[in-house]
Image 1 (cartoon, rainbow over the protein chains, first blue to last red):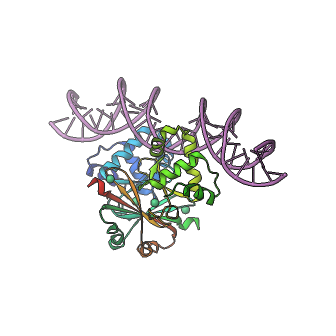
Image 2 (image 1 turned 135 degrees about the horizontal axis):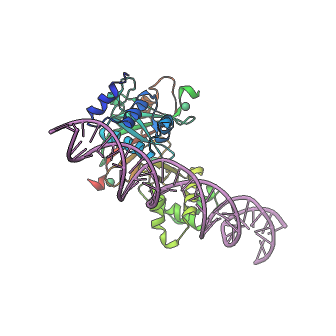
Image 3 (image 1 turned 60 degrees about the vertical axis):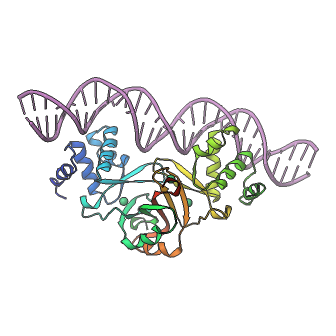
Length: 143
Length: 143
DNA sequence: ACGCCAAATGCAACTTAGTTGCAATAGAAA
DNA sequence: TTTCTATTGCAACTAAGTTGCATTTGGCGT
Ligand SMILES: [Mn+2]
Ligand SMILES: [Mn+2]
Ligand SMILES: [Zn+2]
Ligand SMILES: [Zn+2]
């Protein structure tokens, strides 16, 4: 992704263009997996952004729909950009998360519309609005 | 469920029969939704069990497979008995979780074997071992 | 029934991801 | 350039869950 594209995304979502936002969004766009606050802080440690600023940046991105977050098994959050902000990563409103039980990385996958439908109409009286599929297993790098 | 059945379940899983274990397992079996540590502590507050003991009880139950736990959106765990320990609640290794966005309750549902299969074989190179489906929406009581 | 011992319990201190309040700073619109 | 509001940095805080350790107890062998 061209570096001038990142300020353009921030402007599109009515967010002020600041150094921390540019840096965090670039990191997320360049990653092929979902990332934690700690992952991002580690990668950007030379720029010594405050941890609270990073948390708030991730919250803003999530509220605006630039990224989405996934709860992990160890009580933390992972963040990944949504498809429209990175053509390389295929994500969508309804998609699957593959969780590698070896390296704990989480990958976002698209799923075809139909595959969720059978599940959605399963139980009478429950109004289903969104569907998330979680796959546990071993990722390619860990096999 | 008959009250003498609970010690029998504990014995079946090679756990010593203690007051806290009987109480916690009864609460979980009687519940129609998954419960948090705080939920359980609240219900058993008159018996003033230590909070660490409750945490360890839930860990033991999970390790033995009497219950399973589900990560919530707010960094906590919910616990629910597995099917074999309560015929009234239908759960299985592969099943769905319905999360009510109003009351935050989580319900366990069985899913038919087939519905997951299409998803499992989706991405080349990823070895899928387990499947969890999460449905977000509104439960019957909240509509 | 009695004694033994590993397992279970209670308590205090600790860990850690994430939050809150507030004063100082800096985008960006005018 | 000025102004105003959103953003940032820092310190203190919250809350779920964990760890260490001394005390107690369930269940087994006798
Ligand atoms: Mn995703
Ligand atoms: Mn379940
Ligand atoms: Zn892996
Ligand atoms: Zn509800």
